[in-house]
Length: 507
Image (cartoon, rainbow, N blue to C red; front, side, top):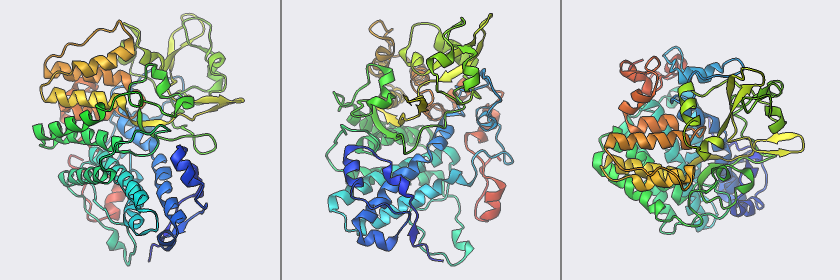
C-alpha cells in the first residue's frame, strides 16, 4: 500500500496571521489534500505542506497542556461548582495504571512526527527558494525536537522514527520497539543542533505575532532539554553549562522587542499580539480559524454565573463582569495553593490569571475559581477565545537560566528579582541567593505563580528533581514508592497491536 497523499485540511492554511506568513498564504492555492508529486513540482503545494504542520501542531495544544500541567500540584481537589472532570482528576490524583492509561497510542503524536518527517524529507526537493527551504527546515527540526522532548518526558523510551512512511507491504512493517531514553535525548539534541545550524548566525526577533518557531525558540528548548539531561540523564555540569550558555544567548538580546511585559495581562491580551515583547513562541488562535476553548472546564456556565460573585458580597456577579462566558467549572485550584496565592503582597500575576468565585449570599463561601487568563475578547454577544497559547516566553528564559545557575551553584538573584519586580512592583522583596535547595524552592515558587494554566508545572517539578516532586505533591497520590508514575504506561491495546513494544517499567 503506497502512501502518496499528504492530507492537509485547507482550513489549516489560514492558521498563521503573522505578516510574513500572510504574504505567503496569499500565494497558496487551497487544497483538501496534496500529493508528494505536487509538492515536488509546485511551490504552492510545498507551502501547503509546511503551513499544515502548524495547523496540526495547534490541534495538540490541549494534549501539551494536560501532559505538562495536570499532574502537578496546582489543580488538586480544589472547589468547583459542577461535576468533576474525571479525566483531569485522574491526572492530578495520579490515578494511573496499566488498566487506566490516560493517553493511548502515544497521544497521537506520531501523526505529528509523520508530518514533520515528510516536511524534512520533501522540502529540500521542492522548487522553493533556497532561503525559504532552509528556514522551513530550521523551524521543523525545532518543532520535532520539542515533540520528541515532550514524549521523552512522558514515556521515557519511545519508538524513534525520523523518516516518512512511504510504502507498506504488510502489518509487521509497522512494528517498532521503544528506543532507549538516552537515544531519544540524543535525537532531541541532534534536531536542536540542526535547527540552530540552519537558522545560522542571524537572530531576528519577529515584530509581528510570534506564532512561528524561531531560533530563539530553539535556544530556549536547548536550555530546557540540557537542564533535564544534566539533572536526570547523567549530563551533570557539562549539560548544565551548555544550557546556561544557550539561555544567556537569549537573555543578552533583552531590549525593546524581547523583555518582560510590565503589565502581566498584556502577555495574553489578544489585541496585543503584534510585537509582544514577552512571547517567543505561541500557538495561534484567531476568530474564524480556531479558538482556545479547551479551558472550558476552568470557567463557569451561564446559569451559575448569575448566582456567583467575584467578592464576598452579592455583587458583582460573574455574569455582570463576563456576560457571554459559558463554559463549566469542573476543576479547582488546590486549596492550600489558593490560600498561598491570594494572601500576602498583591501579585499582579494572580489578579490577571484567575478570579475567586463566591456564593452571592451569606456566608459568601468560596465556590470555585475561574481561570481568566484565556477568556479572549467579546464580539457582539459572543465570547471569542482568541488568546494565543504560549509555549515559551521571556519569563521561561529567566527561570530556566536561574535553574541552570542554581544547579551550578551560582547566584540566581538577578533572575528571581527581575521576575519579582514585574510581579510586585517597585516595593518587591529582593531575593538573596542561598543554598541550592533554597534557590530551587524560590524558582519553583515563582514558577507556580508565573505559569498557571500554561502546561508547565509538572515539567518544572520533574526537571527540578525527584525530591522537589515529592515535596510538593500530595503523598497520597505520588510518593517514593510509586516512582513508576513519573512515566506513563502503555495501554493493553498498544501492546497487543505491536508485539515489539514492552510495557513501561513498574507497570
